[in-house]
Image (cartoon, rainbow, N blue to C red):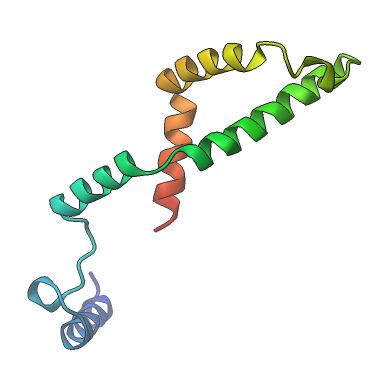
Length: 112
């Protein structure tokens, strides 16, 4: 590290010591084990109804688009067991989906 970089690091550390609380006066930048457990409980208790509604809207839109691309009317198929077929496929796909896992983790990582 250059002398200038080292000096800046020391100045920044002294500012943290004066202004922030945490271990040795520095801000904590990593979650504790207790915080990880708390967030896991939060996820377990999170209501899924809003998520399920959003997934239903997105899937219905995609299915409707596919039906219209076939030159058909989506409204003619609302009573068909399309929901059950898609639900079974979606559950299996999400369980094994690298894309789902990656996109979920990427969004969390990108939020700082």
